[in-house]
Length: 107
Image (cartoon, rainbow, N blue to C red; front, side, top):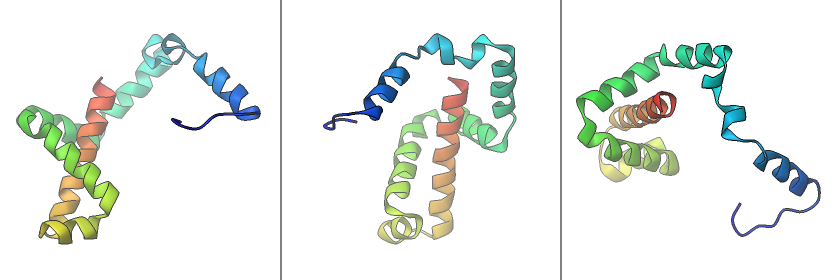
């Protein structure tokens, strides 16, 4: 929260949150966490992201940027502004989301 000061109960909560370390929240440190992360890899969204990253590594940054732009402007508005079909814009959005999902889960 840049530019804003926390006060009162918010400050205490923020301090408690900042005291949590990576080791305490790292799901790979516990068997249940491993199982959960493995389950995230067994999804269509993960597979789509992995496939795109493997087949088109040179386009990964561009598709993520475009999908973020679609999120900001809205699907129909983006399609109209770029003179593409809404279906094509949706495919780009979904591809970008799947790449972000894959990269987050795979690390």
